Length: 377
Image (cartoon, rainbow, N blue to C red; front, side):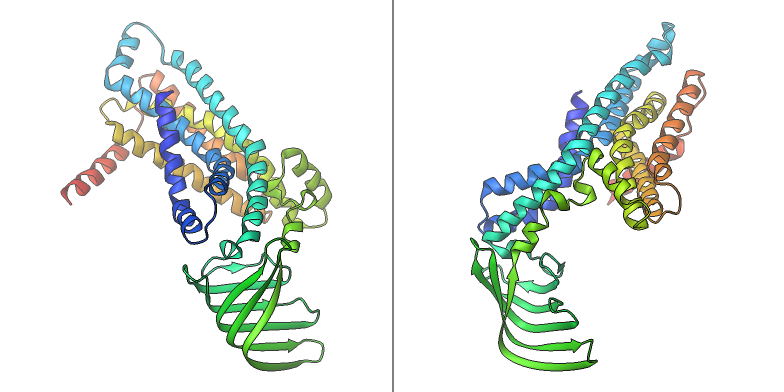
């Protein structure tokens, strides 16, 4: 248990490092309250934990057995007539506990956390719209408006080099380019105006096949956050915000209507259960690796665990890519990584029980070569 919680805290910190800059920017430059920022972090954590828990389970099993191997406890057990298979039940129980924890995150934590995060972010954006804008990122929060800002002045909140595609009027497309801009409005009514300076409007009338160019010194565009808030309602949840029951209903609804939405939702449904069961597959894989590597250091165990988790994540990503477009059934793409790693773990465990070596010498050699190179530098 101690290695599990240490790894859980360590990997959670690594994942949260990505959010540190955004958090600092919200607190310092946009005066967002610390309570709101902490809630945003809490709502984000279930998404990270669904991947961190299987990784921590594998690292905990691997590091524990590496310690036992290094202290010659595995040899003592064998000499006492205790079979390697006697170690399987506690590992399976521990992995099953990890499966339940990860399953709670994927089934309940991620849907509710994602939904709460979106609604809270809208509340924060309603008081300070600049929070929802990011530099060099296309923003489509507003109905039929695509917004792009090259740079945001952190002190004045001024927008530099603004690009807007406005399709609110049917049959007419307006492309607005301005050197500077600023957002003003009333947070209570969620109605804002973007005031642009020194730019041009390129208007394309599709019906009349006509185009016009207008230059301006000052130009106001109305931005309505109410439409964005309406999209956060329960009736308009995205598949990633749905529970398994809601996903099942959504799959039946879009079946035969939209191939892309059908396979995407089916993929997410299987993913909610395949990721938790990765704890058992990785726990079984960690057993023979930890038992055989009796001369390895803990640093090698950490590197070995990371290698196989990255392999799992790569297989999962490949399965997601091919499963979304219907190249093969999503059930194969989501469950194949578990079958491969779990099957490899069972195979290597049987070899360990029969006193046959598990071939990980090339991994040890690669790890020690990298460590020696880094120490020289």
